[in-house]
Amino acid sequence: MRLRLGVFLGVALAGLALVGLIGRPTRDGPADGRLRRIGSFDLSQAAPRSVNLDYVGEIPLPDSAVSLAAGGPALYVSMAFGGLATFDLTDPRAPRLTDHLTGMPDPRSGNGRLILSVLAEPGRLLVCDRLQGLSIYDATDPLHPRPVWSRPFPGRSPDQPISVTRVEDFYYVACGGGGLRVLPIGFTLETESPNALDSVDYTRQSIFMPPHWLLVADTYDTGLQILDIADRARPRVVHYFRSMGFCDWVGVVGRRAVVLHRERGFTLINVEDPARPYLEAYHLRPPRGDYMVKCMEIWRDRYLLAGNRYNFIEVFDLAEPGRPRLDTRLTTPDEVNAMLLVGDLLFTAHWNRATVGVYRLSASGLAPAAP
Image (cartoon, rainbow, N blue to C red; front, side, top):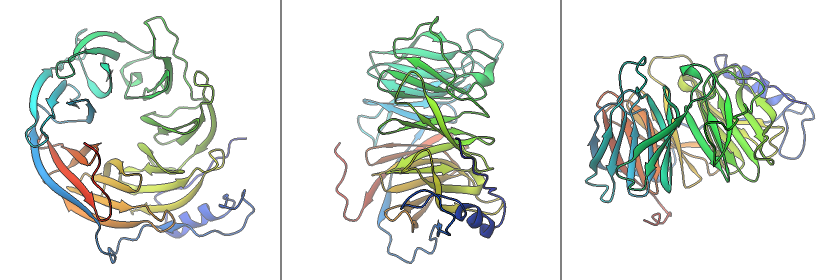
């Protein structure tokens, strides 16, 4: 039986705690009605800072970026109608623009492109295009990708791909109002693409959690959806975790899901038993005009990086999930619209400046990542 949780992010924190405490599973077993403490993020920064973000440089872009991806020596920058820009990252201190496939501002054009994200694979790119559908690009030369063919999905432009996740021999394609489509890796124009979700709001992203779970960000009405993909071709929804707030992105730290809620902040959901998740910690803000998390990344399976619309990055230490804390806050030159981690390098898309900032991450007691 699906268990629904309605936690309204705009109410007082006391109300949030009460909803999470009553009838939620504990670490020792299923829910039994006992009260349980829910953690909140420590924002005091009383402990010494352990994470450093050292500025490396800034990359000018042809247009503002909506997402970033990497494949081999290449950085791929999706710019919606601005098209797709490719940079050579052989020397991260001096990235070089190698290609720019332009978009077209007229959506009525049959050749128009509105590129939202890229999944890089050896020899090819899967490009999520709001006008063309799921497009295959030849990336034999990763610094000069070329479109080959596109597979549109049923519905209109809002039902086309936003992001794609690969798990073994299957792709799970988040298609906004079109839900979550399933495709085998050898798909063609004729391959069926069943919707894996029974109920859909606006599916934005998914992430695999071993051994056979898929966590899906489905925005508002259904929130975090948890799917069993033991049968990769036939996902099965086992739970909705409805937060009554936007669920735009989900990441995994151990057996916990980090869920982004825009201006409300984010929550930490325990998914040790994916069929019975529960709220473990929260970092929620009252409605205000100077806080909105636009993007997140997880570094070293411990640190949560949150890029904010209001020109800063926060780094949260999740070493103790029941007592997460703010480790570092870095002011940035502009709104952080997207982020990408490549080893210890952090790339940040600055929306108004149409640039990508490059930072090198380091932390006390952590050896640098292998190049």
